[in-house]
Amino acid sequence: MMDLTEQQRLRDKTAAILFDWAEHRVPPFTGENQDSFADAITAAHLVADEARINLGRWIDAARRSGLSWSEVGDALGISKQAAQQRFKSLDGNDEIVTESGEEIVRVVAGAFNEMSVMREEGRKGFELVRTGALMLVFRPTTQRWEYRRLIRLSHNVPPEMEREGWRFVTSWLPFLYYKRAIGPL
Image 1 (cartoon, helix red, strand yellow):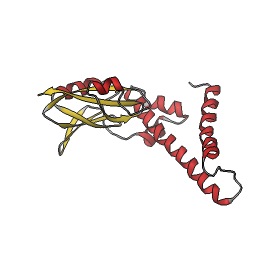
Image 2: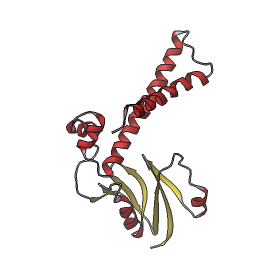
Image 3: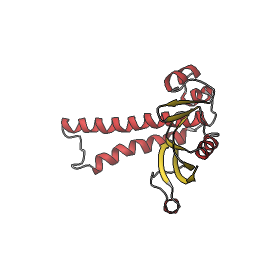
Image 4: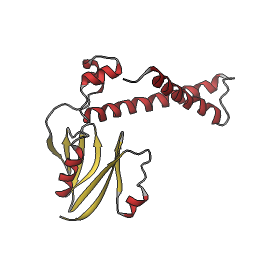
């Protein structure tokens, strides 16, 4: 469990985002008139909204890695049931394949098995088009595909990967997904 010192350091960094915004905006936020507070509220709302989105993505990543709803609830200081109700985005425990138009959705792909799912689908000619909570979405092609998953801040394809033909597909915190065609079926 995260200790209080680490918690405070994160709180300070989060607060620093808004202080940085106030100092570097043009004109700087001084709090000397009412109108500027609307912008401050908007800035704080954006930070909170990003935090909410990131929380959901980290919980999805934790669930894909095998963390139970009880463990998620403990980390948040809420019950297992409250964690499930607030953050559960997909139902079902079995890995299933469904077809929707030209897309194939592999549901309940987790952090520990999604690379093997991507390898399997790539060999069959299915191109990864997006990811979501416990799912991978593919479309059929006439090419075989290879996939990589990295933890990075930038969506840019690293230069050495770009030279090897890799392209960015999508991100699902904390991972970035890349693909490249490796030949015809």
